[in-house]
Image (cartoon, rainbow, N blue to C red; front, top):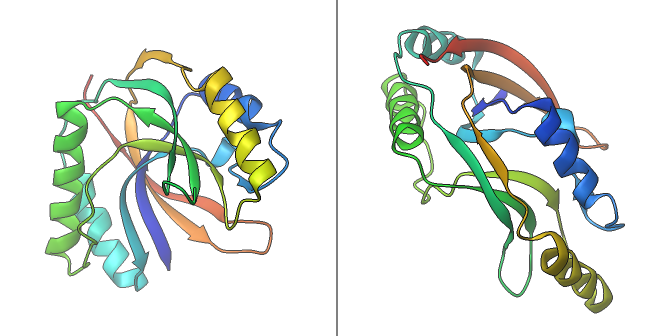
Length: 180
């Protein structure tokens, strides 16, 4: 089962982020109900391993991080592959991520070793034509400074991701409370 662990987001924020990118007619949009902050991508795992991870995640005690959206940006440099909303660094967020990754490794899940850049994925790209790049640059120039007031999620979640021709379908498997 393909799964990940993430923080859910307020609906008013995800609706606003979806609205910001509606003008782009290229790339694959992330629907508002699928937006989140990924803490650990678990790849494909047997259900028994995810059940063990569930027990480990349920034992995590962590304070709720304070999340602040600090603007829009791109991953991929000259060949953008993702438009995202950046999340400001937060010690509680980094600590929560480390606890989740430690729990995943303890049940035998190998995780990639990329640098953590907390973000909300908004639109994915395969290839971008020059005119589309101009549209992206205009979006970043006019709306790239988008911010959102600090908020604190009350839980983190384990989510199943099923790939489909219309994009991934997410189903919540479990949620875990965070202390406020």
